[in-house]
Image 1 (cartoon, rainbow, N blue to C red):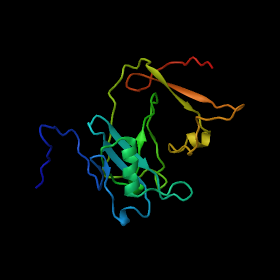
Image 2: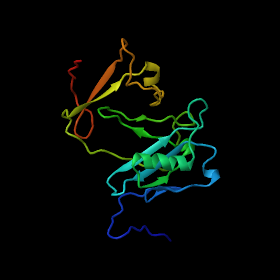
Image 3: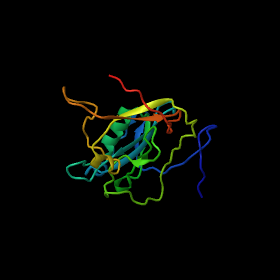
Image 4: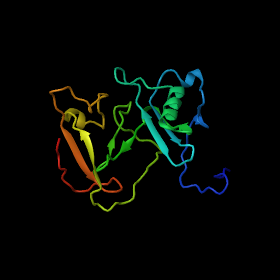
Amino acid sequence: GYDVRASGDQEIHAALNGRQMLVVDGEVRRGSAGDNTPGAPRMAIGFSEDGSRMYLLSVDGRQPSFAAGVGLDELGEMMVEAGAHTAVNLDGGGSATMVARTPGADEVRVENRPSDGEERLVPNGLGLFAPEGSGRIDGFWVETRTTPERADASGYVAPVRTDRVFPGLTRTLTAAGHDETYGPAEAVPNWRS
Protein backbone atom coordinates (compact mmCIF):
# COMPACT_ATOMS: atom_id res chain seq x y z
CA GLY A 1 0.00 0.00 0.00
CA TYR A 2 0.84 3.66 -0.17
CA ASP A 3 1.14 6.14 2.68
CA VAL A 4 0.84 9.90 2.44
CA ARG A 5 4.10 11.52 3.48
CA ALA A 6 5.16 15.06 4.20
CA SER A 7 8.65 16.28 4.96
CA GLY A 8 9.47 17.25 8.53
CA ASP A 9 6.57 18.42 10.62
CA GLN A 10 4.41 19.56 7.69
CA GLU A 11 0.73 18.74 7.89
CA ILE A 12 -1.10 17.75 4.70
CA HIS A 13 -4.30 19.76 4.17
CA ALA A 14 -5.05 18.69 0.60
CA ALA A 15 -3.60 16.33 -1.97
CA LEU A 16 -3.91 16.51 -5.76
CA ASN A 17 -2.50 14.25 -8.43
CA GLY A 18 -0.28 15.91 -11.01
CA ARG A 19 1.63 14.74 -14.03
CA GLN A 20 5.03 16.12 -15.00
CA MET A 21 7.08 18.47 -12.85
CA LEU A 22 7.33 21.75 -14.79
CA VAL A 23 9.50 23.82 -12.44
CA VAL A 24 11.94 22.55 -9.81
CA ASP A 25 13.93 24.99 -7.64
CA GLY A 26 12.98 27.88 -9.91
CA GLU A 27 14.24 26.18 -13.10
CA VAL A 28 12.07 24.89 -15.95
CA ARG A 29 12.39 21.13 -16.26
CA ARG A 30 12.53 20.48 -20.02
CA GLY A 31 10.17 17.85 -21.40
CA SER A 32 10.45 15.47 -24.31
CA ALA A 33 9.50 16.45 -27.86
CA GLY A 34 6.23 14.55 -27.40
CA ASP A 35 5.37 16.72 -24.39
CA ASN A 36 5.85 19.89 -26.44
CA THR A 37 4.22 19.20 -29.82
CA PRO A 38 1.51 19.67 -30.68
CA GLY A 39 0.45 22.38 -28.24
CA ALA A 40 -2.52 21.52 -26.07
CA PRO A 41 -4.84 23.03 -23.47
CA ARG A 42 -3.01 22.93 -20.13
CA MET A 43 -3.53 23.42 -16.41
CA ALA A 44 -0.73 23.97 -13.90
CA ILE A 45 -0.30 24.68 -10.21
CA GLY A 46 2.80 26.14 -8.61
CA PHE A 47 4.11 27.74 -5.45
CA SER A 48 6.52 30.56 -4.61
CA GLU A 49 9.88 29.69 -3.04
CA ASP A 50 8.64 30.44 0.48
CA GLY A 51 5.33 28.63 -0.12
CA SER A 52 3.25 31.70 0.68
CA ARG A 53 1.79 32.12 -2.83
CA MET A 54 0.00 29.63 -5.05
CA TYR A 55 -0.25 30.09 -8.81
CA LEU A 56 -2.99 28.46 -10.89
CA LEU A 57 -2.77 28.70 -14.67
CA SER A 58 -5.13 27.61 -17.42
CA VAL A 59 -4.05 27.81 -21.07
CA ASP A 60 -6.62 27.35 -23.83
CA GLY A 61 -5.85 25.23 -26.90
CA ARG A 62 -7.04 22.99 -29.74
CA GLN A 63 -9.18 25.83 -31.07
CA PRO A 64 -8.03 26.98 -34.52
CA SER A 65 -8.02 30.77 -34.96
CA PHE A 66 -8.31 31.23 -31.18
CA ALA A 67 -5.66 29.26 -29.28
CA ALA A 68 -3.33 26.46 -30.31
CA GLY A 69 -2.21 25.61 -26.78
CA VAL A 70 1.31 25.21 -25.42
CA GLY A 71 3.89 22.52 -24.77
CA LEU A 72 5.13 21.68 -21.31
CA ASP A 73 8.34 23.72 -21.66
CA GLU A 74 6.35 26.86 -22.47
CA LEU A 75 3.92 26.09 -19.64
CA GLY A 76 6.89 25.86 -17.26
CA GLU A 77 8.25 29.17 -18.53
CA MET A 78 4.86 30.79 -17.96
CA MET A 79 4.79 29.50 -14.38
CA VAL A 80 8.30 30.84 -13.65
CA GLU A 81 7.28 34.19 -15.15
CA ALA A 82 4.26 34.23 -12.81
CA GLY A 83 6.55 33.64 -9.82
CA ALA A 84 6.48 29.87 -9.26
CA HIS A 85 9.56 28.21 -7.75
CA THR A 86 7.93 24.78 -8.00
CA ALA A 87 5.17 23.80 -10.43
CA VAL A 88 3.43 20.69 -11.74
CA ASN A 89 1.36 19.98 -14.85
CA LEU A 90 -2.23 18.96 -14.04
CA ASP A 91 -4.80 17.19 -16.22
CA GLY A 92 -5.23 19.26 -19.38
CA GLY A 93 -6.92 18.83 -22.74
CA GLY A 94 -10.70 19.00 -22.57
CA SER A 95 -10.47 18.77 -18.78
CA ALA A 96 -8.68 22.14 -18.59
CA THR A 97 -11.37 24.31 -16.99
CA MET A 98 -10.94 27.19 -14.57
CA VAL A 99 -13.97 28.48 -12.70
CA ALA A 100 -13.85 31.57 -10.49
CA ARG A 101 -16.00 34.19 -8.84
CA THR A 102 -14.99 37.72 -9.76
CA PRO A 103 -14.69 39.97 -6.67
CA GLY A 104 -18.13 41.29 -5.75
CA ALA A 105 -19.99 38.73 -7.89
CA ASP A 106 -22.63 36.34 -6.53
CA GLU A 107 -21.93 33.48 -8.95
CA VAL A 108 -18.92 31.66 -10.37
CA ARG A 109 -18.23 31.49 -14.11
CA VAL A 110 -15.92 29.61 -16.42
CA GLU A 111 -12.90 31.86 -16.98
CA ASN A 112 -11.26 30.00 -19.84
CA ARG A 113 -12.57 28.54 -23.09
CA PRO A 114 -12.64 24.72 -22.74
CA SER A 115 -11.52 22.92 -25.91
CA ASP A 116 -14.63 20.70 -25.95
CA GLY A 117 -16.74 23.86 -26.29
CA GLU A 118 -18.24 23.42 -22.81
CA GLU A 119 -17.44 22.12 -19.35
CA ARG A 120 -17.14 18.37 -19.10
CA LEU A 121 -17.29 15.95 -16.20
CA VAL A 122 -13.88 15.20 -14.70
CA PRO A 123 -13.06 12.86 -11.82
CA ASN A 124 -11.12 15.38 -9.72
CA GLY A 125 -10.46 19.04 -9.27
CA LEU A 126 -9.14 21.61 -6.86
CA GLY A 127 -11.60 23.88 -5.09
CA LEU A 128 -10.54 27.00 -3.19
CA PHE A 129 -13.12 28.77 -1.05
CA ALA A 130 -12.88 32.13 0.70
CA PRO A 131 -14.26 32.38 4.22
CA GLU A 132 -17.59 34.12 4.65
CA GLY A 133 -17.11 37.86 4.82
CA SER A 134 -18.90 40.60 6.68
CA GLY A 135 -20.88 41.80 3.64
CA ARG A 136 -19.73 45.38 4.43
CA ILE A 137 -18.20 47.34 1.57
CA ASP A 138 -14.40 47.25 1.49
CA GLY A 139 -13.83 48.25 -2.14
CA PHE A 140 -15.04 48.06 -5.73
CA TRP A 141 -13.99 45.71 -8.54
CA VAL A 142 -14.02 47.89 -11.66
CA GLU A 143 -14.08 46.37 -15.14
CA THR A 144 -14.78 47.44 -18.69
CA ARG A 145 -18.22 46.25 -19.76
CA THR A 146 -17.90 43.91 -22.72
CA THR A 147 -20.43 43.47 -25.48
CA PRO A 148 -23.49 41.39 -24.46
CA GLU A 149 -22.66 38.49 -26.76
CA ARG A 150 -19.31 38.12 -25.02
CA ALA A 151 -20.54 38.83 -21.48
CA ASP A 152 -23.03 35.95 -21.58
CA ALA A 153 -20.58 33.39 -22.99
CA SER A 154 -18.79 30.88 -20.83
CA GLY A 155 -16.51 33.48 -19.27
CA TYR A 156 -14.83 34.13 -22.62
CA VAL A 157 -13.61 37.62 -23.35
CA ALA A 158 -11.75 38.16 -26.61
CA PRO A 159 -8.03 38.84 -26.22
CA VAL A 160 -8.28 42.59 -26.61
CA ARG A 161 -7.15 45.44 -24.38
CA THR A 162 -10.51 46.61 -23.01
CA ASP A 163 -8.63 48.95 -20.66
CA ARG A 164 -7.56 51.10 -23.62
CA VAL A 165 -9.61 53.53 -25.67
CA PHE A 166 -8.88 55.87 -28.57
CA PRO A 167 -9.11 59.62 -27.87
CA GLY A 168 -12.66 60.86 -28.38
CA LEU A 169 -14.21 57.43 -27.81
CA THR A 170 -15.57 56.01 -24.58
CA ARG A 171 -15.76 52.79 -22.59
CA THR A 172 -18.51 51.80 -20.16
CA LEU A 173 -17.26 50.68 -16.77
CA THR A 174 -18.96 48.48 -14.20
CA ALA A 175 -18.22 48.38 -10.48
CA ALA A 176 -19.11 45.55 -8.12
CA GLY A 177 -18.87 46.21 -4.39
CA HIS A 178 -16.94 43.65 -2.36
CA ASP A 179 -16.16 43.00 1.29
CA GLU A 180 -12.81 42.08 2.89
CA THR A 181 -12.98 38.53 1.45
CA TYR A 182 -14.00 39.84 -2.00
CA GLY A 183 -17.53 38.52 -1.44
CA PRO A 184 -20.44 40.65 -2.68
CA ALA A 185 -21.32 43.82 -0.76
CA GLU A 186 -24.12 46.22 -1.61
CA ALA A 187 -22.86 49.70 -2.50
CA VAL A 188 -23.28 52.35 -5.15
CA PRO A 189 -20.06 53.82 -6.58
CA ASN A 190 -19.57 57.57 -6.79
CA TRP A 191 -18.19 58.07 -10.33
CA ARG A 192 -16.19 61.14 -11.30
CA SER A 193 -13.56 61.92 -13.89
